[in-house]
Image (cartoon, rainbow, N blue to C red):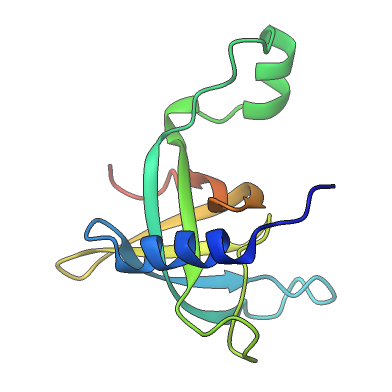
Length: 137
């Protein structure tokens, strides 16, 4: 596995945190040991949407069905998520598969997303988010 360039990763983090289009968000995680427990509030961050998720061209119909399941592909988005807390601090978090993201687009609106997939490299923490279908479009 290649070694990540820390300077490039920190520059990508700063880019997301300072981007004019990045939305404030709060990230929540379920308690895996107690499904009845309240989600843990991991903290505040910024989410920068990078467009609709499109299945790679090399995926066949079966691979697309496996990935999307019964969900509407139009609800899947690419987004970079960064914690506002300083890396290495107790308050810092990285969004993980299974987390929930409450994005705040403005005017008191909250839009919920589920972290379906995530990968981190020098360009940042890129997540595939599914918008909560119960939310108005």
